[in-house]
Image: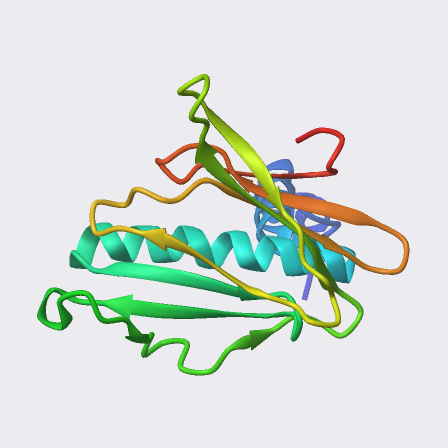
Length: 185
């Protein structure tokens, strides 16, 4: 078989168009893989805080879509949290959320160390955060509500591990959540 000069040139490699398409496909694959790759490098403390924030956002969306109310209960002694549900049929009674029937335990290296709830000050008629103290040995349960219109109680919870501290704050009744060090919040 005799090759013409043109066939020899074509057999040498990729055209610029083929190379561009291949590069585009690889970049597309990396753009989907990179966010999940970064999650693996988050500390236990940050990943646990992000998990709580994501669950709170999901519950708020469910409350709006389904017309249900929820109660989030933080147990500081056991370092766990529970989700309860109230449907219109239950009146004012809360039961365990079907998607989260068991309390969710924090990773063993992470614990709650502070809870703040927003209360209305009698003197100034302004809303302010009041820190609720608790003894880690005795512990306490703190509950916050998400109503069927999606409004949330405003609160801060602070978590810590051996080295770091982080805060999760529900900053307004619309359920906006901020995560950061306690100096920033």
